[in-house]
Image (cartoon, rainbow, N blue to C red):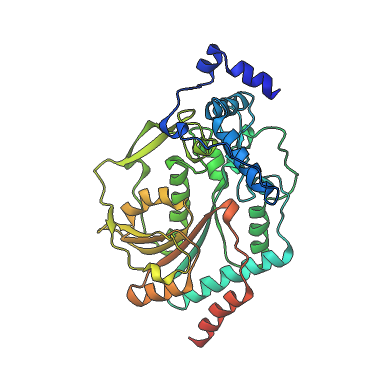
Length: 375
C-alpha cells in the first residue's frame, strides 16, 4: 500500500494534485552522514545514526509526508490524533479528553460534583464577604453545538453531559447558578455560524451570545448596568488564515477561515489599560495579564478564564469601566492583592466546557472558608 502510494505520488499529475514540491532547500541538503562503523558494545548508536541517515536521505521525504497527509484528508481521515475531520469543512479538536466528554464516557462521580459545588460556593462567599459579586460561566464546546458535522463513527451514549450533571446537581444541592447559554447558541446557529470551522474557538457571533448571557445575569445584580446594543456594531465577514486545528494538521494553505468582525459604529471607547495584578502572584509561567475598559463604563471586573474569554473582551471593553483579564483559574493571592488596590464589582470565571469544573483539593476550599470565618 505504501509502495503503491509512493509510486503514485511520484507521477507529475500527483505532484500537481497533492501539492508536492521536490525542490530541495538548503536545510534539506545538510543531511546526516552514514555512520562510519558499527560498535558491538553500543549497537543502538549505529541504529540511531543509520535511521537519521535514512530519514534525511530518503528522496522527496517531506513532500511525500505532506502528500500522504493530503491523501488521508481527501478520505476524511485526519493525519493527526489531535483533530477529527468532520463534514462540510468542519474540524473538531480531540485534546483535553473532549471526545470522551462528547461521547459521555467520563461522567462526574458524586464526590466530584460535591467538591466542585463546595469550591464554587467558597469562592462566592469569600468574595461576598468583601462586597464583590461572583459569576461562573461555561462556554459550550463546539462539539455540543455542531454535533451534526462530527463523523457518525463517533457515537454518543444517551446520557447527560458533564455540564448537564453539574447544573442538575447544583439545582438540587445549592443556590449557585452557572451561566449556561447552550440553548441560545443552538437557536442562533440556524441563522448564522457561531464557531470557526477550522479553530477550536467560537467566532464573534458566538462570543456575542455568551456576552449577552453574562450581561443578563449582571443586570440582576447591578440593575443599572447596560451594554451597547448589537445594532450599534457594524459586522462584516473577512477571509483569513486557517485556525489552530488547521495548523495542527500541518499543511500550510490547505484551509482558510472566514471570520466575522464587529466594529462599533461610532468608533467605540474601548482602550488598553495598564494591568493592576502582577505576575508575581502566579506560580505558573506564561500567565497573560492585561486590562481593557472604557472611561464611561459602569463596572470594574476581574476576569479569570481560558482563551475563550478573548473575543468577549471585544464587547466588554466598550461597556465596563475596567476589566482585568487573566488566562488562568481563580487565584486567591492575586485577588487579595487586587482588592487591596482596587475593589472590583464582580469576579467572572469562564471556561470552555471541556475545561470546566476543576476538582480542587479540599485544602484549597478550607483556606477560603477559614478566611470568611475570620472576617
